[in-house]
Length: 352
Image (cartoon, rainbow, N blue to C red):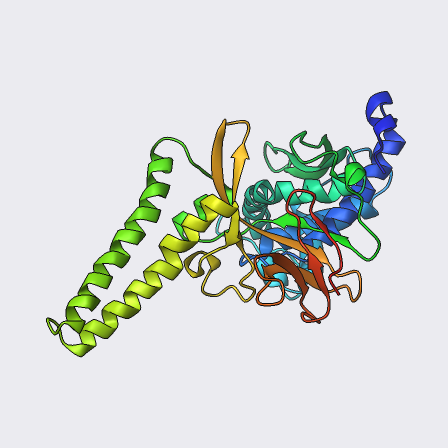
């Protein structure tokens, strides 16, 4: 493990190599739980972690596209996706170059973007293990057929903004757990922007206020139409539709965003959860961005491993039993394996 004394006194190449292998194993285990729509970057990362963890003799082992393509194909069982034919040979494109080279390069570029989104959660996991360095990605660009691009994992200093004191100041209690943040990327521009942090300054602050009051005004408009229908100015079908739309706008727009200002954290409205997301566990957090000296709204999800059964613990509203609170519920036994949730310490204590 990378302790404080190693950070201050330095490490010899053997120690660095061993720590890199250990970091690769940890990161590979974390990546196994990622359920991205595009799994190729995840598979490539797992392949890179596996090769790094198994390789000895090099301080910073690097790998060619051939190494990564074969390792990735072993993981997902989809050799054709990585440019490998039934006989285990590399397919060639019209120029006579291996298709695997381009496939690995594109997947690596996607992986760089993905890890930028997941950086906070990854660094939290390494901080909680008392590391002061974590894994990063690097590559050396090739300059022709004889100098192919090499890909590798490297050790880099963890960001000072990733709650470095949470593990020592707030240890996990007996029977408890610690949550890690997980990105909530969506394809729609608004949810994608909030996943990355929607900074409330300039026009963005005005847009956020417009969402609140615009939703409220729209609800009032539908309410006026409904009232007019009750007075007989509109047919029954129009009246019922107006009542329904007013309720939807209030419940899905104006009221949740108003509560966010007061409570700093709310369940994400249905239009931010994602239609095809099976978990419905995203939350909206209003927090301070110290670097930008402004508040920001972030769409987040928190995950933990259940200390009882090992299943994933996800954050949900407490409902009637824990009204007004967020709690962590285990996916396997959600009614019994229930934990508190503190987004500051990321600590969960058993409630049952």
